[in-house]
Image (cartoon, rainbow, N blue to C red; front, side):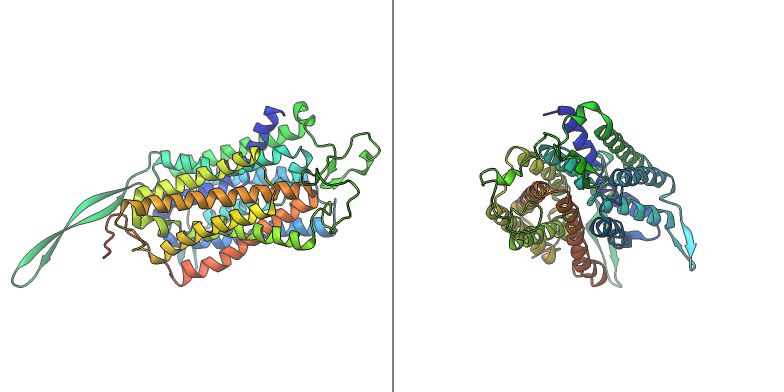
Length: 445
C-alpha cells in the first residue's frame, strides 16, 4: 500500500463538502451582519437543494450518454469553481444590493449556490473517480470526506464562533406604590478571534489543497502503480485493456463463491439480487437523509437547553465521529447486510432520542441534570459513528459492483438529502415546530 496515495485520496476527499460544512459552522458570525438574519439557514437549505441540478445532469449523462462526459475535466472544473467561490466570499459576503426596495446579500447567496453545486456534484464524480484506484483507497477517501466536516469545525472552535458568556442583567420594575429589582442572566456572544474573511480564505486554501491532490492522483508515477487492474476512461471501461494479461480484480464480497456462479441480477457483478440492491439503496438514502439534513437541522434545539458546553461538545464530537468511523471501516470492512441493518437500527434509535429532545425543547428530559447533557452528547456520538460506518460499507460494496454503481451511489446520497430537506424545511422554518432553549435562562419545572 502506498502511503502517498492514501494521503492524496484523503486530501482529495476533503474537498467534497468542506465549503458548505464551513459555511454552516460560520453562521453564528455571519448572521448578525447581514440583512437576512436567521432566515439565512432556510435560504441555504433551498439553495443547496436547487444545486442538485448538478448531480442530476451528471447522472443523466452517465445513463443516456455513457462516456460522453469527461469525468476528470468535470472534477477539475468543480474543484476550481469551489476554490474561486470560497475566495470571493472572503471579499463580498457582507456586500448587499437593494432588491425590490429591500437590501439583500446577493453576492453571498449566489456564491453559496456555486459552492453547493460544487459539493453536490462531487457526490457523483469523486466516488466514481476512486474506481480507478484499488478498493482500499475508497475508505481513505471517506476519511477525507469526514475531515471536510471536522476541520472547519475545529477552526471555528479556535475562532471562537458562538461562544456565549452569561452575564447578570438587572431589571427594575416600577409600580405606583413600590419598586422591585430582579436579576436575570443574559446571553452575550463573544467577539471572534479572527474574522469571517480569514475563515473563507482558509476554506479556499483547503479546496486548493484538494485540487493539487487530485492533480497528483492523476499524474504522479507512484499513484499510477496503485491503479486497479481495470482501466477507466471518462467513466467507461477501456476495452483496449481486455487482451492484457492483467486479471480483473475480483469483487471483494465474492471471494468465497465459485467463479461460475449464476448472476442474481443485472446490477454490477450480479452478486446481489434486485431486492438486496433495493435494500442497500434504501438504507443509503435513509442514513444520508438523517446525517446530512434531518438531525443537523435540529442540533441546536436538542443540545442548547443542556447548556452551551453540551452544544459545542456534541457538535465537535459528532464531527470527530465521522472520520473515526471511516478509520474503523478501513481495518474492519464488514460487508454483512445483517450488520448493516443492525447498525442502522442503533443509529436511528439514537437519532430518534435526539429528535425527541429537540421536540421537547426548551424543556427536554433531564434538562436540569448533568446526566442529561452527557446522554445527549453520547447520543450524537453513537448516531454519527454507526451511520457513518454504514455509509462507508455501502460505498465499499458498490465500489466492488463497478463504476456505474458508484454513480448511482452518489445520486442516491443526494436524493436522500433532498427528501430530508423537503421534510424538515417546513417543520423548522415555516411552521416553527421547534422552540430554541436559552443557554443562560432555561427554566423548567
